[in-house]
Image 1 (cartoon, rainbow, N blue to C red):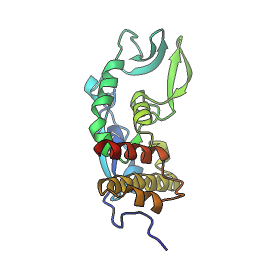
Image 2 (cartoon, rainbow, N blue to C red; image 1 turned 45 degrees about the vertical axis):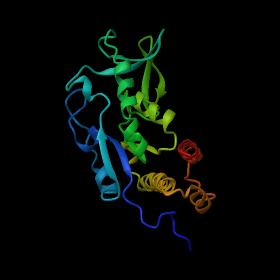
Image 3 (cartoon, helix red, strand yellow; image 1 turned 90 degrees about the vertical axis):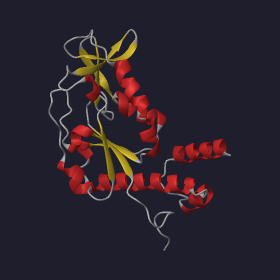
Image 4 (cartoon, one colour; image 1 turned 180 degrees about the vertical axis):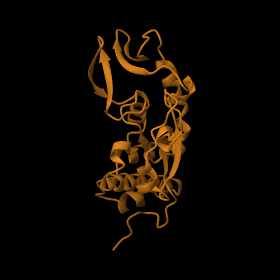
Length: 212
């Protein structure tokens, strides 16, 4: 029976995590959303890199929400529409590129205007019109579509945690194979692997051609 991963020994994958889920008091109201399952189900298996896209706006701070306007999707104050932090949040996303280049996955806060994964309400004419990714979660999906993403509601599901961890390890496995110049061998080893996102191999192949 062949080994599960191309690299026989894998270090812990680096996982970006919404800081409030680790117990950091960075939410708009100065509170946290500590999730014991984050450590109970993944402890010792990953390296966590906590961040909060909204922390630089101050703690505490006025809450914001996603709103469709004439200028498109905006992050505006819940109580004051004149408060628009869209560009500030977008700048934060761009500044995380060096971290996301090394990351193997993300665990994000559900329903957050920055971190929600398909669960963030967006508003139009004063009412909820639907649900979508928060701005940071959308940035990850657009620029790093191979990174597995889950939210805290899924952490209690051991099967989903296991799938997330496996996909994160596959990302790490591919990153190491690329660094070793063994991407073709990696591809052959994982032929037919359902958890391997094709966009990851395409991304690493582009990097390989650029480096050449």
